[in-house]
Length: 97
Image (cartoon, rainbow, N blue to C red; front, side, top):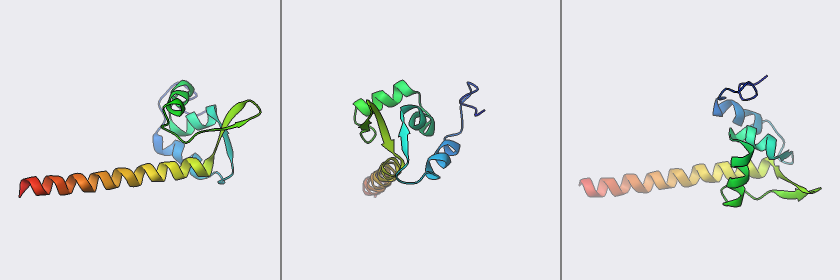
């Protein structure tokens, strides 16, 4: 049983390893994606409503997410954060000089 299932807090890296091991076309329901991201299902649904994760695909009356799209979303977020950090470094360097 995982730490999340035992009521503890799992390491985020451990969960993302599970996501990384899935084929791009693997479908994840809300429960599986919430576990992979280390959030509660309700939090995941709120994230989806706010556009903070890629939209799910309606399949048989429920939402599913493709592992490849979720990984691409994570990569895009990481690249955006890196660009923002670089801009901030340049801004600070300009102010400091």
